[in-house]
Image 1 (spheres, rainbow, N blue to C red):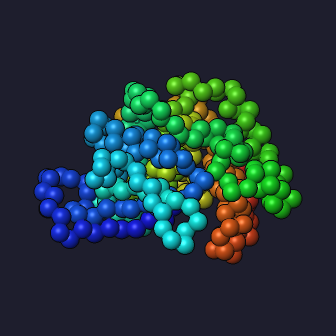
Image 2 (cartoon, rainbow, N blue to C red):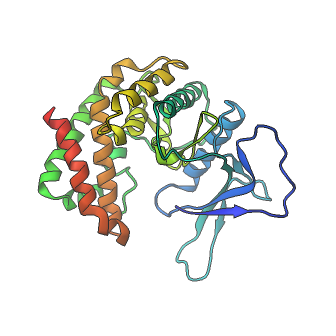
Image 3 (spheres, rainbow, N blue to C red):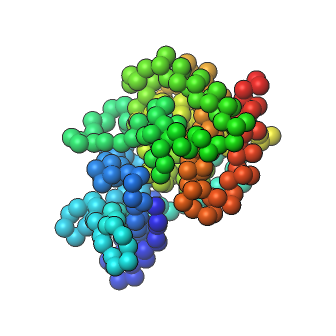
Length: 304
């Protein structure tokens, strides 16, 4: 999506003690076409509203239009198709530039609260979000510009075989786990440090654009996969699990597959980057290096 920061200088001041939002500041999203439908975006906003008002979590709160609508569809000269737009309150906090175990503990606490709300929440009629199952990660429901077979065919042969080996394993495990509430539910699905702000020891999530139905372990895999090569890996890993367990029981059986789902996350990211490289010059320029780096980590998993 294309995003803008919107500062409103003449709005009435927002004097709410302890508010997680920056006064008179908003995030405007112009949604990418072909990735999420208007119904899916409205469903994301419905979950955000529930997380804020029912669970009391510091999440980007949707702002309705003057007509009371969560979305606005806008056309502009020179733009070939209308765009769906949404507006969110701006979260106060800082990104983590020097992460410590305490940050991961806060992420575990947050993740558990998100999962706990998802288990008990009854979505409104018409609620629809992507399923992060096999097709959502690797297939035709992943939101690619191209057909998934075309994206896979663009991978170099060495990477193709490794990535397919991981995808096959993930498919088998997903079949074994099923899609019941003990194994899956509504997840953020992109809860890495680039989508987390911190304030007063609290982790505050942003960018729910990929939220959807998925396996609990996938949220763990996303949060941890970038840190597996860090010397602090054991402390980060343990802190996140401890933070989660203090709020909600850990999905112990699924965590046996954490390494597999971290590899799956890397494969899914590289398929996404390969697809994006066909339409975006920045991705095209960086693709070779990204593939080599992530393929090395996938190879480590398969070798182990």
